[in-house]
Image 1 (cartoon, rainbow, N blue to C red):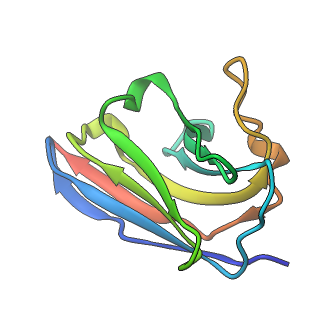
Image 2: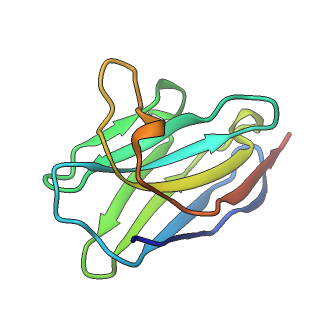
Length: 126
């Protein structure tokens, strides 16, 4: 069983930055991905960024490309999401997820991730 704990959320103004952190109890050495998902009130959960655990290939949803960066630190068992130029539409609960398929063809396979954190709230005001 893997436990994940997110931190780093908060309230910022449009154009601001935040870095989310996800601490994992275990870091699998596998061909799968770790990812960040978000869910805004009244909306479906969407994949935001993911990174292949081996090789480090990165995936981003179009709406955050050029603004968000995912990274991982194997030694510390940490995954990060650096978010720049934040917009009000980025407001959501952000979740870290582990041990899931990497995105393909626009499908982020959110329901296939085995482990999830409790989430951290990001609020962007205009």
